Image (cartoon, rainbow, N blue to C red; front, side, top):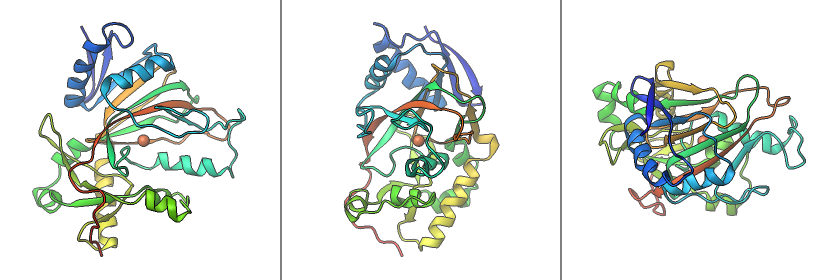
Length: 290
Ligand SMILES: [Fe+2]
């Protein structure tokens, strides 16, 4: 039987005593999914999972994204400021700049043909201060919008591009081949949750365009909605301890990494994404924007 403690009103729950690695995992997953539908974010403090058990937990939720990470290929992506040589990346390291994209508010995989249903993070090494992961409740943020804004945005389609969002932190996804492979992906600006039927803002720094809207207006609208959804009243910041695991519903949240002294302190977490089809629109169609 899972014991739970609420974190914020309706957003986030701590789960205690869950069987995450033993024979009970198959029974645990539907319980966690119910909690995720209701609270959007589940914190498993000091979960006691090694790397293989963490991957098994992810696989129990569904199909996982694959990563081509050089030093750790497979279903997990290592999020760290330490290079393959074991040294903290210097100020001029191009990968350090790429990692800076994690500090922008976003939701995972909206720029891919298969979007993330859930994401998982597990902490191994954490800095002495800072480096929290901040989560925004975009369901509550949607609920609080004036009706006129809801009507304006309910049926809009946004185009998400990692090429665009990385350009915001000075990263150029140089080659034409890469830009083609990472072409913008259409997503609803407002997502209706398949289990609860509740709507959320499905926004991220990846939004480069909104179909049928001039670029400047689209980016202003996306920026305004992100600013609205990330007011302190909608945000929970998870202060990591080694061994913590957090699971969240990407369709009704945003997240970002808080700053820390990344030139002097090590931080190492592993992430996985549980995927679902982005089947609301044709990802390969040509969408008109001005
Ligand atoms: Fe992320």
